[in-house]
Length: 425
Ligand code: AMP
Ligand code: GLY
Image 1: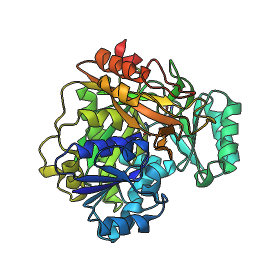
Image 2: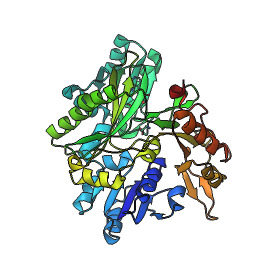
Image 3: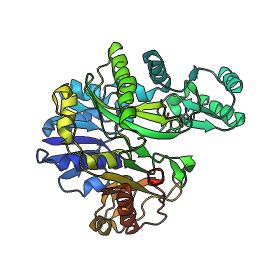
Image 4: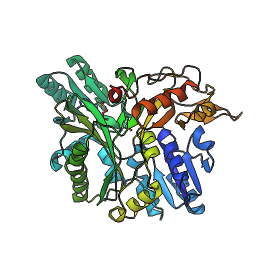
């Protein structure tokens, strides 16, 4: 089998890496990929603009690609699955209508409310004055969200009324582009976040191991929100009892509600949960794709061949598959970022020590990297590398990840030293 993977992050490197571990997979082509996918045996990059679905389709048809896997939310929301399927390709990832569950927070909130999925109390506004008077009536802290895709920047947890009003103005002024038509104002929840990613063929739902991300840039979960600075799996806070409730109260209700709207949702359904201090939970958001960096800790533990699960989702026969099996142990990943991220940062810094790191037993998944003309790996984004350790327990996995990352250097490199702090204490 040859597989095309769309995207260029750590998630896509991990997907390509996992697929290539199977004897069934002869080749993976990443569009556009990164420095890691360019230098991995069996993998190659194809340079095409992210919205050139026609180009991807012609390539896939001419090169006998058996499966196309979509990594990021943006092409899904643009209808890449609908288009590639119409050309006769097998595509893992939901159709455009299904991707709305991530691409419109107002739409997702309405779905959650109508399906009885536990979620924070919220109201949706189309103009600033009404949103502000609601915020004033509710008080702070309060959460203000831009409706559409905003690369993780569209959520403001406001501690003061001023911050909340400013967030409302910023969103309606269109600073998040198309994300500026609606504002969702939501009750502020406290607790621990957990990511539950599930595979679905539109009928059957099979959750993967729960994972915990670390969204903030600073140690102790302080500072600005990022795409994610590290993760571990399985997240022990998501107990079997909690996972059973998530299955019936969240995943099954969401898929049934999508079906009742005529949406045949196949791919990953990712529920971002807040576990409140009383042990209960609420859904913060849905994503229509694998999480990044959660994928970099979930896939190394997966024993069932990934392509078998993906094809079963695409062909709607997930219910016939035996239960998903997992390897012994746990995984942790630490993200090495460019200095300045999530703000301004430089690119093109030469990265050294990846091979040395790998000799310590870690797996290094590239995110924002590329090969320069001298064939050196250089930085090319905010989140640069994910260093994943595996162990029998979290002490081991986390220690391995940090031992590996110590071998790696590039100018301005930053990483959090406290990944997994919740599970260690
Ligand atoms: P979202 O894209 O909706 O998951 O929001 C991004 C991040 O904002 C989440 O991972 C949380 O850290 C935070 N967040 C979102 N909604 C809430 C909420 N209702 N209460 C507290 N934090 C939230
Ligand atoms: N790790 C958060 C996300 O993938 O949205």
